[in-house]
Length: 375
Image 1: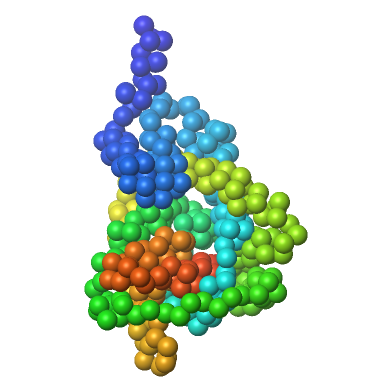
Image 2: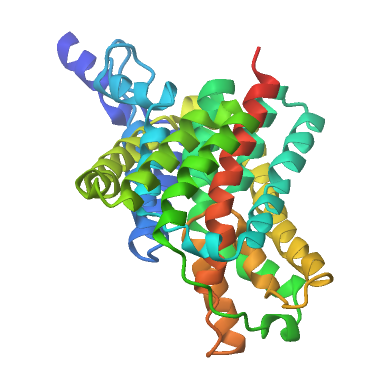
């Protein structure tokens, strides 16, 4: 009977808490949005199931969770804690990204830079709310809507908040089609939404090859802290554009990024154990993350309207919302909102310019914060 009682004490039913129930429900909600609503399913399905995995309670002395030394999940989580997975994802993103839209209209890069305002304003807001500088820097990067960058920076500055920061960042990335349209409509009038832009010029092969090399040199010297992320991003793009390493580029943008996304999503989800995740700080992170994302969207649109004061050929301010680095969802949202006003207005390729610039911008912002806040 003693052995039976010991077994009962080791079961999940015996150790279940209200916090576990809440987190299991949260995992189910993410699975619902990913499977039923098709909101970033490649991210939300692994994260949602990971939350369920991480919140099955177990008895003491059983090394099963991501925080238990020697467990399988702990070894997999090592790639998250040490910031290994995010650069590999950036390698895959670089191998699948076409920078032609940006190269054909370089001034749109400024919209991607403007959208990073949300990162630094949230950083200041987090400081005012009592978060220490390392925590504030990690929270602020959520505004870039770039999950891998948020995970990488938090692994360096505030690993204890990584679960909440990663879930917030990926949640807002997935909810781009829900969050951004109301802000876009509120900040633009119908005349502005109807603006049509000239087709992009054709970009030569030499430009495409030189861009990742030159861009890496410039950004690396400006923000050395971004070397790891942007180095992998531009290296992946060079593999794609060089024309002589197609096999490597194809592997980076398919098998490699898929495997790493599975491991990253599952481990991040499993790190949200109720005992460590359900804290006042986590709630504050979600609130600040939402504000950061909203400010980033608004900043891109506002800067586009300011640019129109000086440009002869006006740009549609809707594309400023694509300055956040949720690629390519933000660009798709711009296309959808624009076509609701004018079905013949095609903004997708134009929006891709600030969208990919936002990826670069958020990585630079992370490098700057890391440089400023590192011991």
